[in-house]
Length: 325
Image 1 (cartoon, rainbow, N blue to C red):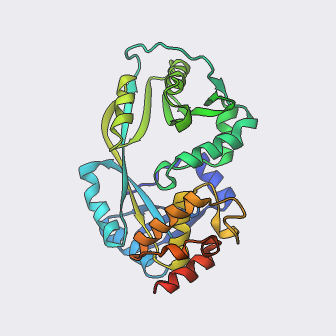
Image 2 (image 1 turned 120 degrees about the vertical axis):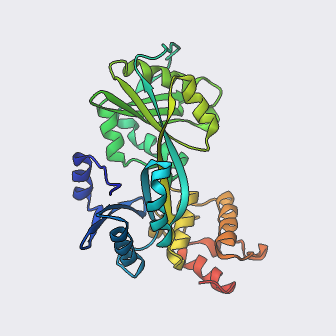
């Protein structure tokens, strides 16, 4: 039993970056991949007992700590047993994706593709920031800049600009006879301009030689699912159940909350979040609300000042005032 399905070339990239670690047991192996400040967990186990035993080692003080996530892929009913093992070891459900597919030939979809261009290497940094701003790092597997650059070189990254800024993008990849639509997003300020439709029409045109198109979408995102249905995609039985284990130590929890608010930044490297442009006044309001919920406290208005949110140490000091550390 396993949830490790990485392509060999992707594994080679992760090894080269030093992103992988392993924990070997007698009848199971855990593979950890560092991703945006947390660890993704993959297992290869002989059976449920072996999986439970090796997960207990992680929970018992193994050097891998902080936020851990795992993706359990399969039919929903078939995943209950494995999910139960992870739940026993401190994981909880975070999100669930369903896979949709479109067989070709399907009904033809014609439409305008005006303004849709292939990304160039010069667009990579902007495209990366765009995705980091919109995506949930735990759910969406945010690509590294190197991966985005590869997509641009392969002409698998489509862009539309709106008022000179990036208004929307679509990133896909083709392996054999299957094309995978990985990201299709439109900026909130560029909605109702037909940008999403133009990107989709261009994607469908480029992948006419593929026999099958697939994508993953959040199960509860009914609006997105209906849009995909409009373009001929239909839900499958396959789901991706994303589970998370949050370390309750102070620094990890604070860092996690900050990452949820502004995933594009590494807050562990800054001593002044405000001066470095990582947090603004609106972000601080969000952070206060998140801290209240995470620690079961109510931070007073007199304490909501920049110096109390300057860095992780300052936030820890503030939490100590409320009996939390």
